[in-house]
Image (cartoon, rainbow, N blue to C red; front, side, top):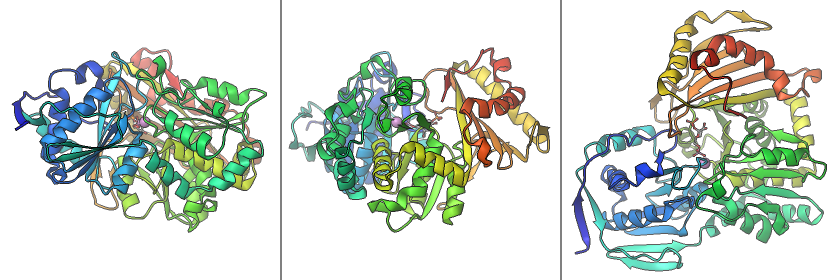
Length: 543
Ligand code: VG1
Ligand code: CO
């Protein structure tokens, strides 16, 4: 019998963060480290037995090894069928979609998203549940508990699966189906957008540059933008997925994708410039001469979405994570639909999506998606923008200025302080937390603090509660300062400081973000004192 139960010893650090378990590659390479976490999943989710499981990853270093192990353990734990992307490749939204299309009981996604890859880089695993969403906190909490007591794991020994050959293979009683990584995902996008119209826009000279950053979206973007929509081959850059992402940092923002900002400002800029991250769930959008902040992108898509084929019936509801700017709230009010404020992390949108209360949602961290799947979806956002541009005949610039003229403008920026000593990051948060109660009513410049608290969330669908989700200082509708600790890093602690300012007067809509936010940054300096308490001179990332 090739299925064996092998002894193991628990690790104590298998605690999931904002989006799955993320650690240095070397941590995952410790004996049985991955096996322990996977066995915890099979033990806790007993309902996987006899069902279908989706497996894939973003192609980073260690992806294949992890996938061979996952397949052998799926066979060892009574999974009836494994569907795996060819070569072990699946973008995060494509995997979420496969779970839905095949009615699978769950999915194992090997990714550390935008974190750098390679032997010295990061690795990670997200466990997604039936329906396609990320495991909720109650479940990841149970996984952590079980992983700390694990004593054995089950595996099909000597499995020899060919990941590169499409079609079915048998591993004991388990059927392994290797599928094209793009097919189902491309079919889904085609069902949502007006491909004819976009094709026509390209024929009439419309131009896009999409940067896959040598990560997972290369094959997806090539198939859809070039093969199906007729964009020139040169429209997709850095399209070849590489194990180390070409040594880059596939985090599409104003620091790691600065070259795209420069391209947008150049005389020969294309109409739309976009990028996605390591695992294909983030998106960055720029037009000629202009960067669209993710919060603005969410609001502008919300305002135009009902013009696109997949959304003709209108929008059910909108949502954003707490630190995301409140531009979408303004649109929700205009459209007279519900608007939800959730904690950071896509998993918090999933119950609302399942309950049919949301059509579109997004996060300031370059994440946007709709009810078509249960993950944020980078290429979806790019196609949505392309479709809006092609349908309205407006440029990105015109869409933005019309939007701000009608709804006002939320200036927004995020400051990251990476790799701080944990104690010093905690001091910043604890100091502000203590100061919050005395802040309400205090005036700084033109702004008065109306609310100062720690964000907590009660899920409107299942009543589950999430506490400690970020500190917020609110100046009515006019401005906000938010502080929270990142839950995706693998070294030290990262502080994120979010600044927002809302203006509606016509002569205040065309400032630069830096100028508009300078007074808010000065208030934040006084109230949050990050530089003073950490000894840093400034943020490592401003985006
Ligand atoms: C970050 C972002 C959050 C996002 C998460 C996962 O989390 O802020 O909005 O959902 O990454 O995205 P944190 O805890 O580091 O702020 V991904 O593309 O890394 O899966
Ligand atoms: Co990602």
